[in-house]
Image (cartoon, rainbow, N blue to C red; front, side, top):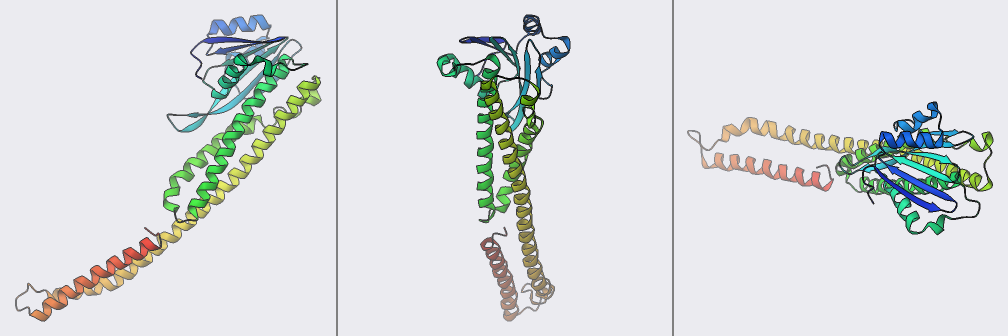
Length: 306
């Protein structure tokens, strides 16, 4: 689902209203700030989407900024897209300036089946935590998919596909780094909030789940990072071994070829006074070097050096 530019959608979940703004105009943002009575300092979090992850707790409202990795179809890489949450009594407002498929999926699901999100004791903040929980689950699926791609690459490397895996390993390394850039700033975002502020029981449970997901994502990314380093080093070592083997073959061939080429002109059948024996020796040397070259090429292919 792609949300059109400057689109506003509202979903009612008793007793909460979820209002989502996709690519809001400056007038829309100003109106939201006025309606929610956000202070000038906190308004910066809403106005500028390039802020880092934040969780601001005030008596009248809550502001949350999180980042979500979204794959860019054009560059084939993951980019950080920001979601801004404004939580007030009985109302949740979300703002995005870029498309976030996971959020769009939740919005469509909530629109079609609002009863699935209508739990006893639900508050605007616990509902915001529920959305973040769903988004984190989507991100975790991407991380686990990335883990499977790394496992496939490892299997390919150890089955003689080192050269083919060079580009794939580079792409995987870039994806792991992209996820690291998202995960690291948000790792401790929800860690100590329950010690600093009073939350309802449902909010506490949702908060603990989000923190657990952040730790799980971070630990998985740490494993991925270590695996990528080992995989890259292993692949480089295997490629270096293949290159050394190829150089040894070429050197061996040159040791035989250079002396023979140095004396082959003596038996040139086109020179004055050449005999039938000279022609046999000349073409025999040519045939020998050709057969030797094909033998070396076949051996290199068998050893997957080429």
